[in-house]
Amino acid sequence: FRTLDDLNAAGRRVLVRVDLNVPVRDGRVSDHTRIDRVLPTIRELSDKGAKVILLAHFGRPKGERKPELSLEPVAAAVSERLGRPVAFAADCVGEPAEKAIAAMNDSDVLLLENTRFHAGEEKNDSDLADRMAALGDAFVADAFSCAHRAHVSTEGLARRLETVAGRCMEAELTALESALGDPERPAAALVGGAKVSTKLDVLENLSGSVDLLIIGGAMANTFLLARGFEVGRSLAEPDLVATAQRIMFAAENRGCEILLPLDAVVADKLAADVDSDIVDIAAVPADRMILDVGPKSIAQTVARLENCRTLMWNGPMGAFETPPFDRATVEIARAAARLTKAGKLNSVAGGGDTVAALNHADATADFSYVSTAGGAFLEWIEGKVLPGVAVLQR
Ligand code: 3PG
Image 1 (cartoon, rainbow, N blue to C red):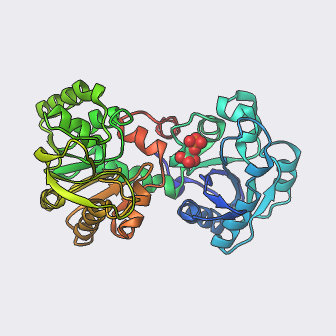
Image 2: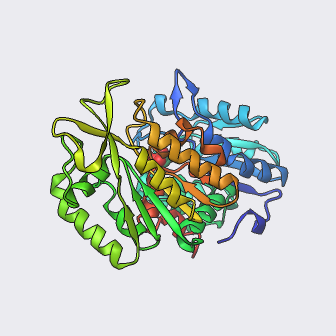
Image 3: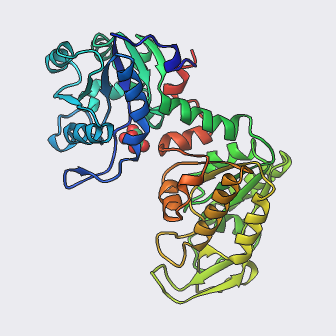
């Protein structure tokens, strides 16, 4: 795919799709990660003398103009992080957008209002796409985390304008490709989280590309049932036991080893600082529940990671929001961070709870790459084609 290196930006109106779907509390942005990831693209285009026109969605207004889902407060946050003024236009097409763009000088930055205020955005409507495309001379796709949506601003524009990937998109694709496309081996994936049912395609796809699949979180319980262990009152999906068996059988046939917990931390209920015990995986009491994997499992996982060159991480190992059930997530994340820092491991993480779990472990900074994408990351590791990526590869 083409990148900013291939774009002649000076003096041109460049539409840039970014992901500014950031958490806002009391009118203020409470986590700047997504904003910070797109600053290099904005800065580079502005420094090259482009008129930088940012497009983004915010929340799910479903085609309605909802004042509480306006991007205006986010424009102020982008400006603050960028250290340069960022103008705002009250619509992403039509007169407000046209006027604001006509008033731009080279190097100026402008944010247009929430693209999802128009019902055509999510329908990838061709009229809306034509109108939006007419606002720019070129398109930069920099929202990997929205690339699983075939919307006007993620897909339609790329069919109408000269298009390149921005620096954030480039970094995401390069990192994901290094971990899944052609990983250095041995390659491992760690998949945790609550439910097997939400990760069937993830497990199936990963077991076809990695050598070792480490399963943690409550979803491991369903696999333990499939191996004939009792899991007491633990969260599990008994109707997926046959599916878990099939996944394990298929993985082993493809040369992918599945690593399940050897021991567990059990308690009567999920609550902070309740009494908990460590038990062997064959001795989970009928009246208690598994809330984290135990120390033997942690040691086993870390020992195996020491011999791996690549790790793809998705989901927590235990109920990490409720200490002490955060221990396995924290210790394994820190071990992966340490191996990465020592140059021994390429570690890529993303999807849903993963970033929060790695932040909680203080491990994010030392991972090779932590994706800002939730749904898009999951679809990628499911092996799906993302429309916003496919359109870059045409
Ligand atoms: C996200 O927050 O994962 C992206 O911004 C996509 O948002 P969506 O799920 O509403 O399309």
